[in-house]
Amino acid sequence: MGLPASALLQWVSVALACLATAFVIIAAYRSRGRRKRYERVVEECEELRVRLSRDALTGLMNRAAFDVALDDLTSDAPRCGTVVIIFFDLDRFKDVNDTLGHKVGDNLLVEVARRAGTVLADSSAFARLGGDEFAAILPHDGSRRPEDYGRAIAEVINEPFLIDGHRVDVAASVGIAVGDALLDDGHELLRRADVAMYEAKGSGRGGYRVFDDMLSGRQMRESAIRAELNKAMAEQAFELHYQPIADARTGLLSSVEALLRPQSRALREVSIEKIISVAEASGQIMPLTDWTLDTALRTIEAFGSLPVAVNISPVYFRRQDFVHRVIQRLVASGTRPELLTIEVTEGVLIADIAAARQSIDRLREIGVRVFLDDFGTGFSSLSYLQHFELDGLKLDKSFLRELGDKKKATQIIRSIIDFGHSLDMQVVVEGVESDWQGRLLQLLGCDYLQGYDIGVPMPLAEFSAFREQAAAGPLRDFGALGAEAAERLKRAG
Image (cartoon, rainbow, N blue to C red; front, side, top):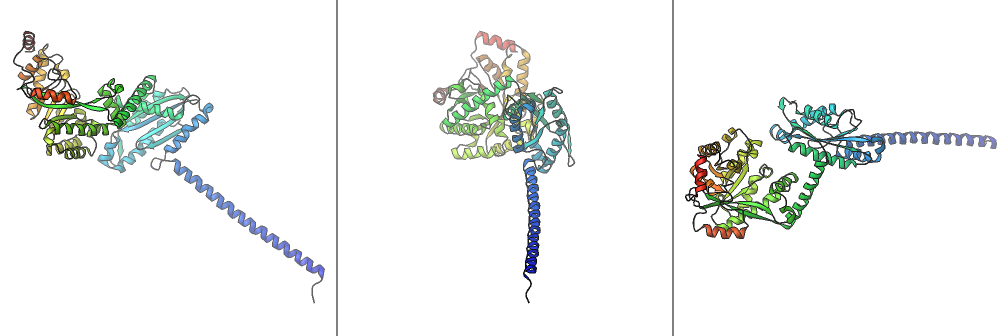
């Protein structure tokens, strides 16, 4: 017998209620599961965001996070007010990696971050930008002078480190920029701090510098030079001038030095020393030196047996592939290595004696001659020369300023010439501007003479004509002197 209608309806109502409750319970469990999954995803995203904004080695902010902090200066300028931007890197850090290994280098960076963090505890952002570069943003409330931060960072970093049992000595070059977040873009302030850091580095490593209007003007001038350099390099708007070098004993043309000269009007108004300095700082020195070597070697090919000297930038010389690049160009041009002379400065030798000696030895093994340029202007100690086998040295022209007026000047030059000969090196004296100087240097035993009295730097066509005339006889007859020259020789002793 079936159920009464009322009972059936009651049963259906209960069943539907149970079913509804089940759906609610199931939905609740699903909702809680979704919420947990959502919370887990949010947590994972936050962990990922933190990882992506942190430097994995030091735990500091990374470059991307620091860029955001710089952007926030502009978006929240009223609150930020006046700020100090610090930018610093480590001098001699590459030497640590090269000599002690990257593990020691990494551990050093961790310790640098810790030490600098004690000085930058009040910073709103402190980051490792990459490599050995660090930056920070600090509020400037007047309680400390901006330069106090630079001095404090330099002091804590300049103290020796003990890393994995090794004593490590590095130094920090610190750049500082001060600006108002309402008026100054954060990224521009970082650029100014970068400029100030390189000024500190150039003034003597392990120091600090605050950006000022003078640096701004200098930076603008250097930016203009870099732009002109890029344009000139793209258009190959350079040429080599050639200055003759004479044998001091015979007066005959013995070799030539190739000197880089810009053709563009804007760069001709800039000293070649400044052009080279900017090119070294910007990295343009590499293609510029490649071009100089290639052009000089083509000149040797045209000159036949006349040796050509090329001055090599320290930045170019210190590259690990330096010797390889020279050899490549010798092979490509078909030039005999003994016709090329590489001139380097004292600073190149002192910076890394072992590496410099290896490069010089390899060059000399294949026949390239190596001369020490601007001798006597860089270091008071001569002991470093015992580490090198060099073919010769070039005495800087500053030694000739008092020649003929003071006997001490003559004695110094004689001593340097004797010193060079004692090390089996030939001696070239630069800056010879009169016949009596040439005669005196000849009497003192100098091997070669270079200067305006011998010949000025000349473009290739002009030098080719000069060389044809020089083939007929000596460039100078140092034996025939006038009364004034004889008197100067007498005073010189």
